[in-house]
Image (tube, rainbow, N blue to C red):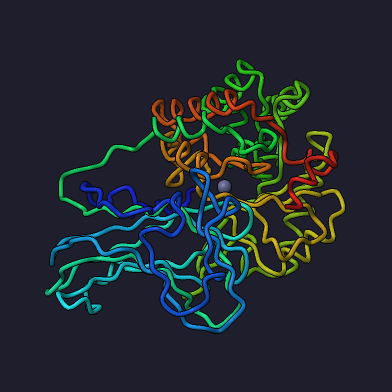
Length: 435
Ligand SMILES: [Zn+2]
């Protein structure tokens, strides 16, 4: 049940030195920005596009015109590393808008070849749906650099639509780290907790429940005890081959916890397997046959009924990897009604709950991270729901502490903690998922 550990962002180099980018928040309209080509109505500043603050950049362009929105230039020096952070949300064609760093020479001409391979000077707006995602572009200033600008421009000749907000540029300095601005984000949240929307519904999606020699591990017991203490609901993903064999204590524990009404159980696959066949990487629900996937679902539901007395109603795939076969197989099971992190365009007649990548317990995977959560939450206030994922078996005391702070923060925001399967039985919740 291990995921590949993605360490890229953990060991990212230190950063320090915030550049005085003018109006990177668009709170002052387009002051500090120049539109080159295109028509003014393609890029306007309004409240619908706000992530932090009251305003953001709303791009809506059905033309095939080439244009560019360029920031005022900032002094920069050759050899220094610059990192640009922005928050974006695509409302139309994914990847249609690129946000990038450009370096200029003394004559104001754009310089090329400044980056080294592991850096990306531009990142397209990728996040679709209702949540803003954070993107970071990075580049090394080439020889001849006098200044640096931010450029926002279309990269595809298709309808383009995106919300962009909260740009920030820093010069990275080795050995220096800017502390997370948790107090500023909390103040922003306090000033306008939900942007006029109801408090969010929150599914606490905890993955990889199985037994240890017929018993439940202390780390699961700790997280369940905490949920009872706080009076909240948490939702545990069962790897269903743990239901094989004779494990009365484990089965009774699940039944007892479910009976409290505080602990839910959903289907997290049969064996959570991933393997290689030649060069091809396969997953339980990625690249395998219809027969394979169907048997895993049928065996899981049969054992759930036999051993626990109920079928699974909600699903979340191991590794969140699924394919077209999964859509077909899930579509054939009428008891499963809710699909967490499923593809929005392939619903298999299920209620699909999306993933706000920036609003999650763990960043990166396995590392519960309170500051990152607060940042993502501040940028996504007003969303109807969040499904936040965690892996309690990977949490030492420090990670568990971050988890409890995230939950206590959400309690303070009057979040309603729900089970994923409630989206199938409560129309008000289903409406939130419909977007
Ligand atoms: Zn898992």
